[in-house]
Image (cartoon, rainbow, N blue to C red; front, side):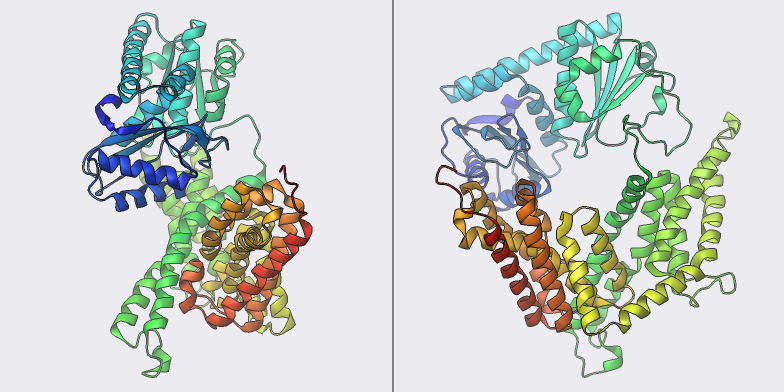
Length: 639
């Protein structure tokens, strides 16, 4: 569908005055409503804001493309505005936005919004086209400029397809980014455009959010001189076996298309040889360290595990909140029907924690063949099976056992893949259907069963030490784990602290989770307080961002502090670390407990000693605020 079919004159405003990203979104949703595209403006607006929370739609170069899809949309449509003075939209390049398109797509309307995103992203890469839109004098002229550009693009595509069919493509490419939206298509457009300028036919396959488009055919691959993979996620390379292949970042496809094409036709690109392994990963030219690889595999398991832990933990906490302890203290949490139901469902979700952790660690290592093996190995670890008692129950391997099981399962499957890689082609179907699941599950379970007693001893020792802690030692632990939350705010140190706390939930140590969440809430809250009460230390833009940090801090989203830490680490990080450590130590001192590993202030009623917990957070935030105010000097008037 063409852009001009989605955009009406009623939804265009060429001289808008707005002060913030929120103003842009509010104004454009009103244009969508005015054009008759919406059933419910407020619901649609919530959808747009929810999409912004996943990542900004300010794609850079002065452009923003906010969008949402759902039942609040009556019919597919676009709105467009020009902000001649520019507006801070929190764009990827931190530059102001001058031109914005908003996409509304109805539920069940296919992939209209993704097609519109792809088409707009491609068109707006043309600087002359973008500037012409910004300088348009009327809505009619605005629409005519778009119509002319679409006609030009359609004509180029037909000509390129005809030329490619006649002469063959010298260079083929695949572009992909994690979200599969703007950058995927921007890279594709720049590679094709630069190839045309250089007189070198280039065809690009885009692996976007709505699937692969412009797919490369076997004949094209066979005839091409080189394949360029410009992607920030794994791309299946098996079909390029025996061809010269360049693997790089999607950003290079956007910013360095000429260099990539020149390298592709130089004759100096190494030939790619596929090993036959389903798990083979792309090589980017930068050798990944063993530690980094282990961390990525672990985080893949943890990221898939967390929804089960968070959902299950909060439901269990709500069951205790809604139950009546006096009915039967020994059955607390299941004394009333509502509480019993919530706790049962929560336990089901929580019980998936260890198998999911193991399964997705194994999958990160060995791709899909590792998933089933990892899941079963995780269940064996959860059950505490031993060769003396396969049914389990004798040992408590817990989180550590499941973690080890995931890595063992993944590398066992890799071993099986290598051992069977020389099998005759006719027997290849036996590998995924018989060998990996049968031998993989058996070997993965056997290794996990073997190590369960050792993991159980370590786990029991750790649990015993933690349970025996009291007084100063417990407060010190709270100081350390909470302080770690502010060291890198979402990085490896932060994640180590958080994973340790979630692992202890299954062992019944709820105080550590409370201290860690308190520590993670402090950085944005301390900064928000400082921007409010010590305004002369911050720029206008920082003060505006500080207000958002109140919400982020109360929601346990530490990443809101990252822009401040990045711009002034020597002052911000020590302030936040000390504030977090203070809150964590006080949480431990007050004996606060937390069964839900997320939620911030919104799960306060389910926390043990909630008022004291709120006091710990308040004190930690004030401490961090005051230290930051002392370390940061007032700005000069010009700044």
